[in-house]
Length: 69
Image (cartoon, rainbow, N blue to C red):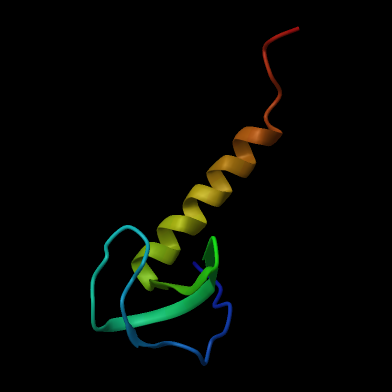
């Protein structure tokens, strides 16, 4: 289960991660910077759960012993 970064900060908006859906509850995850531009990165529950799963999978893979000796 995803832990809310800011539990009281869910608001209606656009998910900027995988689903790109509009007008659904989203949460601020951070700021995206591209050159001089800065925009808020928001995501829905489904996409934040997916992101959390990927983070955990990557962390598990990076802590696994390697076979190369």
